[in-house]
Image (cartoon, rainbow, N blue to C red; front, side):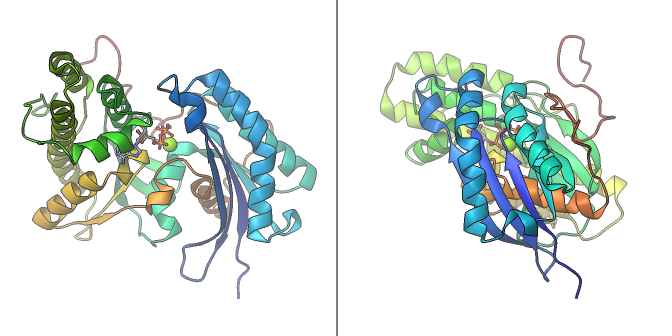
Length: 358
Ligand SMILES: Nc1ncnc2c1ncn2[C@@H]1O[C@H](COP(=O)(O)OP(=O)(O)OP(=O)(O)O)[C@@H](O)[C@H]1O
Ligand SMILES: [Mg+2]
């Protein structure tokens, strides 16, 4: 029997301080021995968004306790851990540095391998914690800072097919919640209040829907929501219908763009067995899951989602990415530094800013 690898993972890229201990199992997935996430929702709520300095200070206050708690709950001692993985980017440098430094220091003092994990690779591989999925697969990554279609060819091997040219989808949900005064964090509250509204009441734009392949754009939709929000003057019924119409428009956009992404995937990868993995914080949205399920039934592919608890930021996915990289000998020295920008496909064109041609 081969030894099962066990990793400690640490995540502090944004507003969650998280640590987890993960062990490989015989099924090719993971035993999650502990998964501690301390959210800073109450700290950032009054500002309606993440304040970097506050987030960094909260990470510093919590990180030691969270790592201790993760080790204690896992019943695994530091001696028994095979390696340490910490998120090194992309994200807020002041936040990343907290988890990265403690991870590097622990690895150096205990003489253990260290892996600097790309947070997006953590999301990309997160369904693998519970489901064994064969490479290559199509990934729709929808989170607070990113919205992309990528081919996941292997660990560390990504090809971007499309990306947002302006806002990320999570950001669009958060801003919509703020404009409608639905509370923070935005995504879950838009989803909750959308259930009380009429999804067909407002007609909203679907930017770049008939051009630019599977690239995405949400800025024009956000502006349209703002325009309508000003008109409805706090009327609850209309507010809920605007939330519902926004979410319905997102679903229409994702339906059409995912169809294009599947076609692009088919052209590049010769397989009849197509898996679409949807990951990142927004993948927790049930209406988005049901919408893409409909598309998968219509054109014949399989959709795979991480468990809800692994959609938002967590350290289980970081430890899992750490184990995968360790097995491929993709280790880092402890002088590795945090990166605010770190695309999964380094060769993908930069799709933001003036002069962009679609
Ligand atoms: N049920 C939901 N419906 C829609 N959006 C949601 C839901 N739950 C969470 N979100 C959104 O997911 C985002 C958070 O996801 P995540 O934690 O992966 O983002 P991040 O780590 O800040 O960004 P990134 O992963 O791109 O660096 C937020 O924008 C949040 O509003
Ligand atoms: Mg994230």
